[in-house]
Image (cartoon, rainbow, N blue to C red; front, side):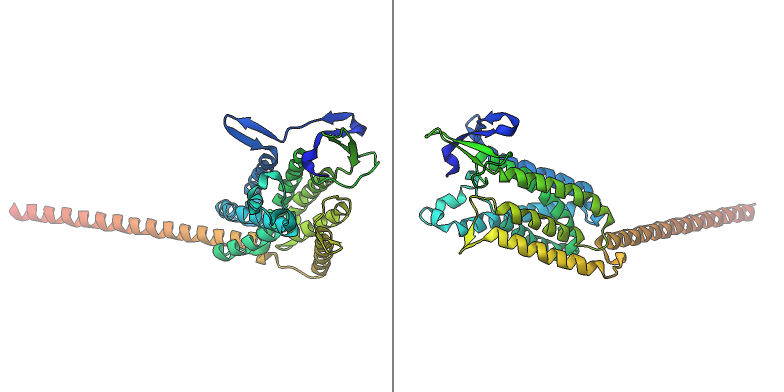
Length: 324
């Protein structure tokens, strides 16, 4: 079943039957809903990150620098990851690799690319990696929740045939046959929304940098493990679904680290937000000390000026008396 074969999308439970377009035109330009939705998801993630950067001890400018550097690299990695496991489809025509608007981004490739990009950013900006990953992880859930709706418009990332009450119908435009499948794009989108809400509220109670990022890995890995098992278009490595294996490993590893950290004490003074606050306080004290020194210097200058004026006045009086 190839996505391009399908036209109408239906949800019998809700009485919905629509044929959403894959593209629309603005003058001579063709806009793909897939790319547009991913762009909107990215924009919302960036806005969220900028609004809450201070809570994680990160400057908004540093975060925006990271977005400009990390995002293109993460998208590139997501695309290359997907193409590597679908090499038979691309090996005959390498130009297809560039046609990202046709779909084909692997989220785990994007996550790996984002982590590498964040490591470089933190090295340059001298920021703690865990703090940046915390805010990036929550933003990722926003982007992923939105991005899955790009799959909806592309008629992709759906599951195996099912008669579930939540089944989604796909009409084959050529044969007129309707195939009912799991709307796995919808499952994952809703799972990501739930994860975003949970981590958003938990982020204020962080005990150490990286805690929210670990929560993201555990939550997303858990959901993706089960959802991937329903997918009809999984990327395989031998008999194994690659994303399902990675989801299980990341979930178990993240949970193990979270449990270990629960049994340890953590010094909040070592968190990026505390370090940033201490730097800001030191900077403020330095500025205040500088202002006091400048005020004292000005006062001393004024005193010297007044003393000089008084001396000159006395000299003038003495000269006047001498002349008399």
